[in-house]
Length: 70
Image (cartoon, rainbow, N blue to C red):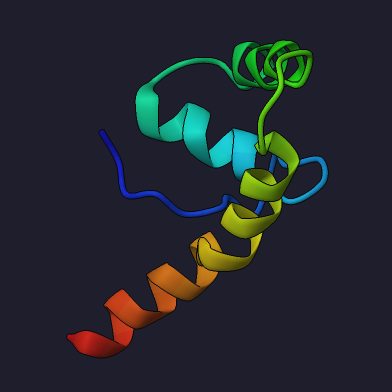
């Protein structure tokens, strides 16, 4: 499994589904369908998506930190 970060390419709105798909080794389309189906159930899915969009770092920022550390 890879580090959880929003990718710079292949994201539609915030990159949260793309980041989760990359992390768990599934396709982005599958993760988006799972999110849309989960929105039919009661719960805080949209709030969680917004929170992850704010909290998760962008992939380019993570790579820049790794390069400057060495």
